[in-house]
Length: 459
Image 1 (cartoon, rainbow, N blue to C red):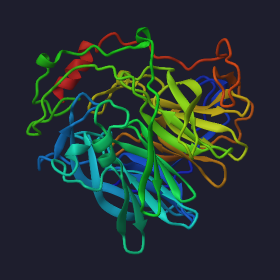
Image 2: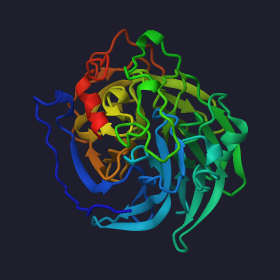
Image 3: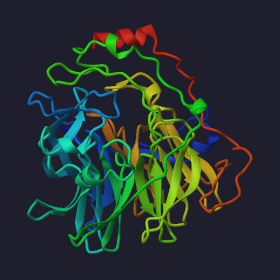
């Protein structure tokens, strides 16, 4: 895997008053690493280094190791050994810890990778790595030839060896806990004591996994997201019969991959959980992305009992959440991947046609919300790690190849922000009648313009 040269910028991006609301003016954003391929989970190790799970850009499909993507209109997901684990030292040096790890991504763009997805350390300093798979898990060991995907692994940094602790993909194959389509994509996890809690955004589950090697103890599905159909917006695209199957880019199947162009828009009402963290009261906090077509202002946040895995909704009204983390004062930070439904801004296959800005939202202990940062360098981001100094580490452009970043957002100076009461606070407060402010909403695209369609056809 080729990475662009790493540079530590420490360049603070000042937000002009005319560019964004006053709420975001006081915070700062700096870039720690550039040129990454689908960067995802981050964690600080006991050695003080920042570790990063880099999912990779999959393969080119030349060896036939491809399956249709279940979430990108069946564009080929092709396997390759382009995943890695890297670290950034306290003085800003980038080092590769593990490379040639299995990876799966859309071909040829390398977008929406699955592979090394998240990393954590236990209290003893042991490292654990979660591997995504993003597709029908029955193809993992056969067509894809990537048996490490879909598993929670223990990492020995001395020997560079990986030990499987739980096969989440196999569990989905055998049990299909939520009873919907057969898909697994372990995306993030949290460690409490000697237990790992794994979020699977494909299976829509949380799994309780023993770190002693005894396996999966319990799995529970998240509640479906029953959105009013009148709130659902869908892209207008040519029917399947009008899509040529030999266009290699622009969101269409590549030649030689054996995948046929298919165009449909199923409504699944699935949760698609993506983020997890430990709350100050010892429970787990989980956020969801939501299902296609990714309805705006519908994503929820849940509290999960770590013993029983009982799930309770504690907040809603978000769009495509991919990160949650608490600060030392007990405030919750939630990360919106993109502020509008992703299909409005990125064509299937990775062609960016709109605004992929995301937002970082602070939810106070009293339930009020304030936008700490929106846009202005925060794009299609995923995951939040609270740094020792209280700043927030985020994987930016986390679904893209070659242009992924690790950024730091310092929210400390954002104390004079206008607060927004949320409809259902993290403390279970009575719902407010209306939000004081709302996110800017992109004008609904009734159909792709002829200009954009022409762009796709020329790729």
